[in-house]
Length: 333
Ligand code: PBG
Image 1 (cartoon, rainbow, N blue to C red):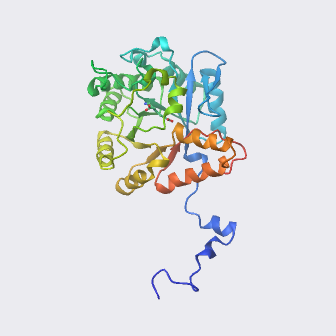
Image 2: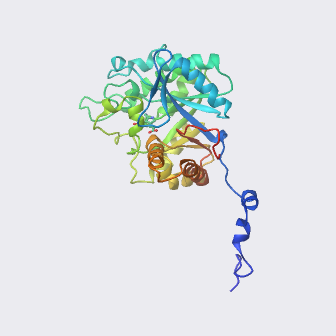
Image 3: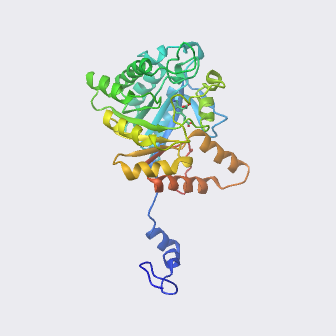
């Protein structure tokens, strides 16, 4: 039988897998440090380094140590970092006031990094959960079971302006309010921050994989048993992905984030096929820590499985990946 793909014995696909050189020559996907964005957690004080138990090899760092860590990452070829503040419980409230304070921890961190470290892009998460006593990403209704959209957008816009003034390169709204990209773009432009970019979490599922992160920013104790299902997306659906991405592009997003990564490769692939916009996927805390714990128990070789996982994300269509891996000198990538 003849078809365009040929048949055995003339066709032998294994010829292209014969040895390392031939396999490398024909490999379609590669991953490098250039594709990676490293999340970092900042705390108050000086010379402070706290181990994050739920997120192996990751730390909460005070600004001085954070600067050293960013220099180290930059020297290993990392192009961008993404910052998250760990806010003192005393500064948390129900309005997210501290997010609008021009001298808040994150603003001070960004300002200091911009002054001390060159050649690395600074991204910052936009959402109110680090600042809220209840751990939600926005203002709660009186009934306390619903996050109010438009009232939250007003504060997100102010939060964005504070970080733009501090010198952030790109803002990453992760709150999932409708219309927030447009509101943020508008306030940035009105204040002449026309070059501050927006990488929106266009697609963020109400996933069960964010646990170690909530522990890292100390919001697990605030959110308790509540969930974020009235604003983050329902992972039983896939029709709404097109509307979410279209809206964000129309409102001014420069690139988008799809989160989490490994369980959502079908979603990444669909967006890649339907839109021409850079896609970043977020390999979230739960995904990372599961691999680390499996490696610790001798079940997998972390470096190899991690590389396979990153390649899968890129094969699905991601242009870059946010992840928590502590890069090692002898890493295979
Ligand atoms: C908060 C935010 C979360 C993450 C990034 N930004 C947690 C959440 O939505 O509850 C999770 C990241 C991770 O798990 O690695 N807006």
